Image (cartoon, rainbow, N blue to C red):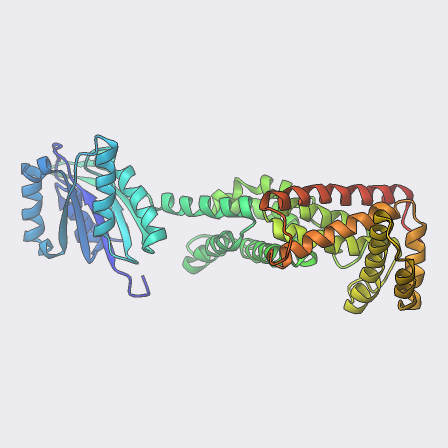
Length: 444
């Protein structure tokens, strides 16, 4: 509804021996007919009814009688027939795909009837409509089935047959796509929307007791986690991960009732977010650093390599702040003017020594320009046994970061494969650096 989108129905008919029944849907009323396509047009009131028929069925008595019944009910004007091949080969299936794709208008809302017709056609039509959801903004709104086999016999009258609403299959597909996006790429927007709707729906109807209480809160935290991850807000991401994980046990019961597809992935979400979760993300501790490194792993697993590289470079600065117990580790002037300056000076020293070029005078001048705090930290840094490895790691992290951040607009750039490979290798070296220091305690 909304946005002026057209409501259309898609149905088909075969050569079966169809019997008359009173088809009924609780919210839409009932319709007495032999052909469920007529009930679809009468009860759901689409603006257009697409009828898919083969050439053989088009001349069958069933189709002729159905057309007459639609005309008798004043519904013939909404009917558009689509003559399709039987679908017995791949070539014919692609032909059906083309015919249906051309017929359904852009942004249409589709009611899909899977009752009659050749048994494989519903799967073909469903696939086409899902594809059109991406290419023409078509939305599959409802799936219906006229369940004649579930009829209720009535003495002296035609049987009464329920209309099964299989719309949950549409919703399940939405859930699957949303869960897939979150688990594969960390995109939580659609998953959050579905959770929010699952929370709001029972509250709108208030038809049941024990209404959901935590689903909406979970939706908000998943969205915050996803946005923070993708926009490189690591501390916010770690805090949101902790809130999501804390909510999981409370949400479990509500998910089983109101958001069943979400309930099935709770354990996977718990496994993914457990290494990231911390309720003290703003405090620089060994645990916090471990969580930041785990977030780099998360990025690499999701193939978010740019985020992994940029965060790895910042984690090196955080590592130095932790080693020297710097309380103002988030302040820009401290990060750039002290911590990064120390690492840059150490890396320059290592580069000069490695190349065995003269440069000690320049290095001395650089040191003279450092503040007392920079000089003190640099002296302490150079006294550490791991100083050379750390300086070399910073140099390579800085180069990789610049390569990525400047979009390869440089004289010499790494290939995409090399960027991925280097990112993984440097992440392992960061791990080793933290493990080495945590085993001996940080520098007082």
